[in-house]
Length: 99
Image (cartoon, rainbow, N blue to C red):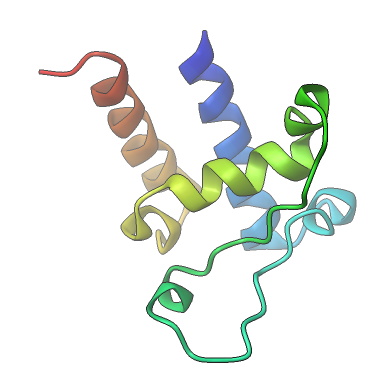
């Protein structure tokens, strides 16, 4: 059940970032702004807002960037939703059931 939730949050995040729709979700996913060029900027990390409570960490505005930043860089550059979902599902299946 835990990995299904991760799958849904990452899929919604991909759709919001790729198509900029819906705007209320896209506004919660802001890229990190750095004053210098870093190696991590090639992975397009998202800004994770600070929260004080455990319930606050479950909000979409915090959970989605946290999960998105933990994904491999190759997933984030997928051209379409079908290949992204296929690779994400394989990745999460291997995380849940290691060989």
